[in-house]
Image 1 (cartoon, helix red, strand yellow):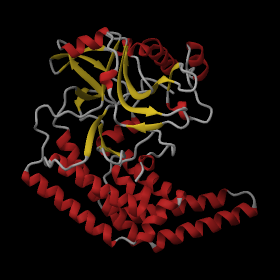
Image 2 (cartoon, rainbow, N blue to C red; image 1 turned 135 degrees about the vertical axis):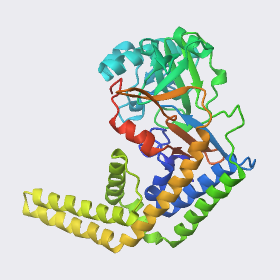
Image 3 (cartoon, rainbow, N blue to C red; image 1 turned 30 degrees about the horizontal axis):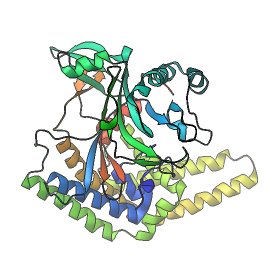
Image 4 (spheres, helix red, strand yellow; image 1 turned 60 degrees about the horizontal axis):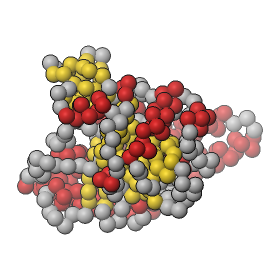
Amino acid sequence: MKFTEYLTESKEGKNVHLEHIEDEVLNRGVSGSREAINFLRSLRDMLAGQSQSHVNVTTKWDGAPAIFVGTNPENGKFFVGTKGVFAKNAKLNYTDKDIDKNHPAEGLNDKLKVALRYLPKLGIKGVLQGDMMFSKGDLKKETIDGEKYITFQPNTIVYAIPADSKLAQSMLAAQLGVVFHTSYTGKTISDMKASFNVDIGKLSTTKDVWFRDASFVDASGTATFTEEETKEITRVLSQAGSLFQQINPLALNRISANETILMQIKTFNNSKVREGQAIKNTTTHTNELIKTIETKLNQSVLEAKLEKTKKERIAKKNEIMRFYRSNAAELKKIFDLQNLLVDAKLMIVRKLETIRDVGTFIRTDNGFRITAPEGFVAVDRIKGNAMKLIDRLEFSQANFTAAKNWSK
């Protein structure tokens, strides 16, 4: 497996978007399902204290915007940018004028200018990707449950640092804060390849920039599965492996190979996440999916103005519906497999969440509600691939509906 096969918004090895581990069943069919199960087995081994595990875990910080910084190998100039740095017409910002041209939106414009002014002080070699956590004006002094904190909210989660801590003081002295998680190497921007091995130890320190990497550190030694927990997750993963063997591989691969069907299923599943609904009855879920798709395809036919277009859409509808109706039983098994992977994933996430060095909250109309970190990223040290480990009903639902403090 190549690292690039896990990245969905770019096929050139750019870490633009990572997939949820259970969605690899849909994204890559048989090979993705097998890889997801093996990934979770390796994570179980890691948390059970088995040294042969070759998987690392990083904490997924809920920062925004995503930022790319470093030196363009083609001209030797320092730049800052967002995900547009890898677009066909790359938006690399070398000056404030570039930022005004490429990113006129006020929130993002201001943050990129702060980044361009202060990040060169770190002496970055190559290119790094990270998440901006705050700039100077984002830090607030707030009291939560009687305790004084320094808080900042780059995206959905509110991060809270005890006001009397050294960490809070270093943040207050800084002009911006960044968590770096990916490095890039290559002779040109277009051929750069991503790696999760970020060595921030080589960066210069300055009071103007608070920075860290995303490495998960269990300094307390408590994020380890008990014998009973290991048995339980092993039982779930054994069920997943057995069910995987029962699924028709042709149906599974047909989904990953057909972009239309793949997006229809993922879109429908995501609609349940937005509504905060777990997919418990997979038979009902399958029937609702098929009914929803047929309704939308019928509407598309009705909207056709030309007879030729109408016939084409009817033919497409018939082809797609044949797949859904003839594979309803397989779809149920696929959703059951995803549920088992989610169960195993959440056991891992719950254990990792027991270690936290920064308070995380969701801001509500009634104050603050304690929440877990956004999630984690599992990285295979040998193969270099990675997948997201996130409680979608907890975090993703909030993320779908959250008001952002910046704009693209």
